[in-house]
Amino acid sequence: MWPVWFLQLFGQSKSFKANPFIGSRMLNLLGLHIIRLCLAHFIFKIRLFMLRGLVPAATRRAYARDGLMITEGLLTAEDINAIKSEFASLHGPARQMLQGDTATQRILLDTKTVENCPSIKALLKNKILQARLKYGAAKNHPSLIYVQRIRHGHNASIKEQNSDPQKTIHSDTFHPAMKAWLFLEDVTPDKGPFHYVRGSCQLTVARIKWEYKRSINATIEPDGYSEKGSLRASPTDLLAMGLPAPEPMCVKAGTLVVGNTHGFHGRGFAKASASRLELWAYGRYNPFNPLPGFGLSVMDKIQNAALQRFWQYKDKIATQRQSRASWHIIDKEQMFDDLP
Ligand SMILES: O=C(O)CCC(=O)C(=O)O
Ligand SMILES: [Fe+2]
Image 1 (tube, helix red, strand yellow):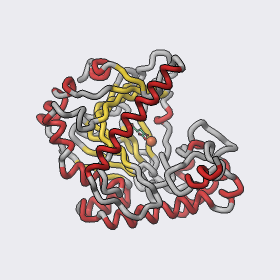
Image 2 (cartoon, helix red, strand yellow):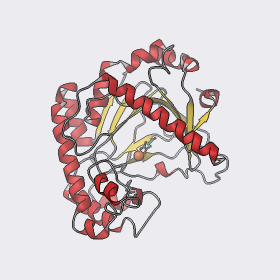
Image 3 (tube, protein in one colour):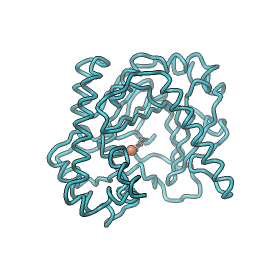
């Protein structure tokens, strides 16, 4: 595996635990993690510059400063009703993953899945949405888009409320990356809103120092997630880095929130049985590639097909082991029952 582990240094691999180069205390003392961190941020800036025509200057400034692009009113109440009325006609499978007491339920909105859903199809072609997703990821390819429902306290076998690991403030990756939420209902505090630490996308001296210390200790002080490359940050850590408290994105239905998830974020605590309904997008890219891509639509098809194949492969392995894949298929009705 050594050649593979070595090559992984030049891509998105982030696990201090899985890759002995990335997790090497000696190499990290010598600055390996910090070199990857700084280079990835620099290259992200180059790609953002190349894609600057996609969004207005004020939005670009907000994204660089806060790590967020918030667009209110991207959808009207009528748009949302039309979208919701098409859920029953989606072709693709619904999949669920359980983390702590939370269930995350998703349907990937690929071409085949939405073929009988004109309003969803139109939304996926929305120019503002697509431009913001591309700019957010600094990548000229369409991002994967899902309909997603987060259901708190849904896993009855887990008694501890709010034990979902997404509820601890963290940074997803050492490199800038994009996730986006287009909320299909008003997000109130009891629904476990997405929280973001404004400004935490920036690579300050204090952040670099914190990352350096964490990279050295990642495999020595495991917390279950940091050692996999998603560093957890305590309120004291945030204070020490001069960062504000996480801010809940309690926004109106139809608002698009695009976040740089290298920045610190997490899911808020929620009332058991509360849920959040949204379109969710995800865009990551090789952090060391300075070219944002050529925008070929075939990339979209390849990406979606590869993901469906990957899940089917995981289903097969799980069946052979008489278990269940972590993203296992559920009935669509189970995802959309008791929608508000
Ligand atoms: O669902 C949320 O509010 C945030 C979850 C999260 O941390 C993530 O998707 O990376
Ligand atoms: Fe996250």
